[in-house]
Image 1 (spheres, rainbow, N blue to C red):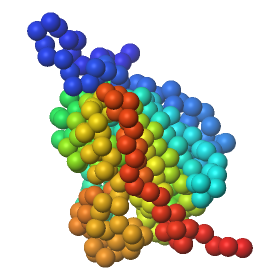
Image 2 (image 1 turned 30 degrees about the vertical axis):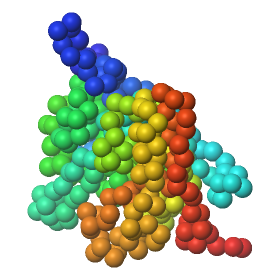
Image 3 (image 1 turned 180 degrees about the horizontal axis):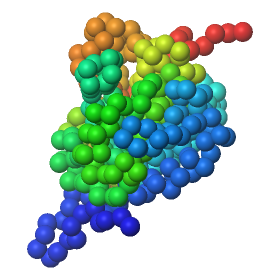
Length: 345
């Protein structure tokens, strides 16, 4: 049985920032994880007992994985509070297949769960001769709450099972697994870690599936009140995976920066909605216009040197519940994507 995730409100207690803090992203995602495990063979996945006795799901390391698995993993990453699907593209989209996501709880789904914000590292000596680094995403983040973001959200999950997604090409070493278990307060049999290398089909798909999360994170960086974002949807074109890790990472970022579209519904007035729409698109960045892999290389492969304004969808709509008006800004630049991804037969 899952524990409550927030102290019940009383007449004397101030209202929480979000009225749905009783939602457990880990408990809601467990049925989705169960469905993933039921379709291992169909989706070209593997499951085994890993370090410390945790369950590892391989979605692209020693097995091919699949786009279907990537869509399912996207739903798990969103903590069961979002929907992900493939959508055929049309002439206006300029690409044959897109990943589409929706959430009626976008802040919890995207920032409390999906965002890759938990830094996990081990030195060469600790990791068996090769240093390990990963950014954890998915609902188990909300059990550990090691990021300052959770203080701002006022959210902490207390479920008795958790799932973490790592964009890596090997299982985490013992020292990292021990940290995850300790920080999440879980026993080994209660933790599942899904491995999704970015150069795999599942890895590429689940990163492109962060298009709405990227918009939520940009809104947070801009200082927009997160509690005012009440619904969200987004889509982005799905490229073929690239065998090179840097190129694969560049493709998934470019899919969102140049091909991502997001619609946010906000409980705010026209002035706030308009300002958010104006400032949200990736074109506001001084680094906009070049493939992300080239930008990354130009900054000596240091993410923190890149203009933060670049990490945003290409085109946005922001609807105000207060007025009923919708504000639009940004535009797609499929030329950047097609130049990199497409070869005419």
